[in-house]
Length: 231
Image (tube, rainbow, N blue to C red; front, side, top):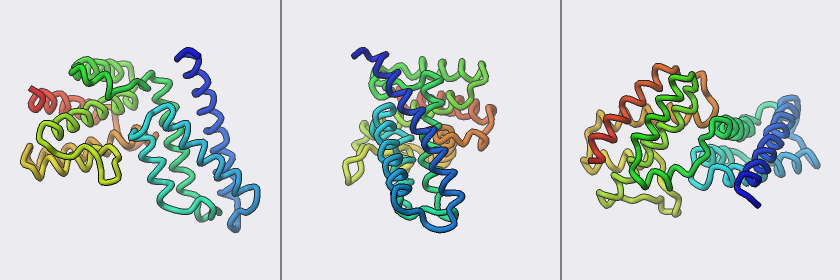
């Protein structure tokens, strides 16, 4: 099966998961007591399927998978009612954020492409997205460049790239490790934390939490940062 055909099938599956998620969340919002029986089976099937399609489209270690795993770890999915379904909404947010990334053409293997050291090309692409009014796509792309820059810096300084459980480190732990090692100053660490939060908001579909102007500032910061530290 061709890559294009596989992507089309996965895209349809993603849309089905999103549609199911809307129904599951509506059901949970109206439940006066914990749902039971087949309703719980539907929730568990939707949750498992959501994790599968997220990994299939975005890959392991993506921001979308991180959101999914965080939601899964917060609360049991066998206990759902009108006062306990925020974790379902977080999974749905990851699915919808993934849908936006797919529509914007961002589901490429950043880790593979960035190995060729073409940060500038991706940042130029992000600048183009911004100029066309696609601030969310730009934020996700800039965040990918920032994360890969931190990964390369960590590797160059002998710092860990994976957690004790073998999972790839995300921006925040790499940022802490690099600042503690004196690779850059605490002020830079604070700025990176701020931009990581913006990137995560974009990836999770929380697009009202930031403006296009802030994404532009993020772009300028990452351009300077990559230029200073990746010489």
